[in-house]
Structure formats: structure tokens, C-alpha cells
Length: 96
Image (cartoon, rainbow, N blue to C red; front, side, top):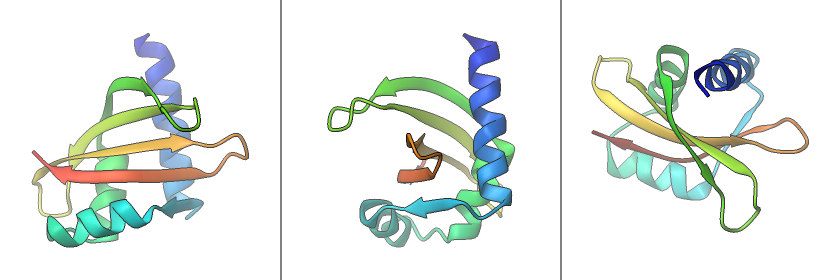
């Protein structure tokens, strides 16, 4: 499992670096609630590791809980998935 998660993390990092991602309305609202910026989300994905894989109830796609650090070093989690089209979707984000 760890090797698979590392491959997923690598792919998500590539999507962040290439700015090939979409932030859901829910994630955008949570960022506001948690006083986080998109840069914090990017930092968390780039610095983080997958903690868990979950099945998305609506789409049936896999989504991943990534624990990383915000720009100022705070622990946060990002829940994201890579769609069938290859786009990274940030579903939610929160401070730990």
C-alpha cells in the first residue's frame, strides 16, 4: 500500500506544480473558515504524505487524505482526488 500511496502523492505533487488542479467550492469555504490560502494547500500537498484512501460516495472514485504543512508550518490535511480526466480536485482542507 505504501508504494501505491507514494505514486499517488508524486502524481498529486506534479499536478500542483503544473497548476493542474481545481478547488471545490466546499474547500474554498473551508480555507476561508480555517484562515488558509491556496498557497497553504499547495505546500501541504508538496510536503505531505497520504494518510488514508477512501471511496468517494458520490463518484465512486478514490480520494486521499494528505497530511502536510501550511506555508507557516501548521499541520493541515487536504482531501483530494484525481479524476478520470487526470485533474486534481481539492475536496476539502482543515487544520489539525
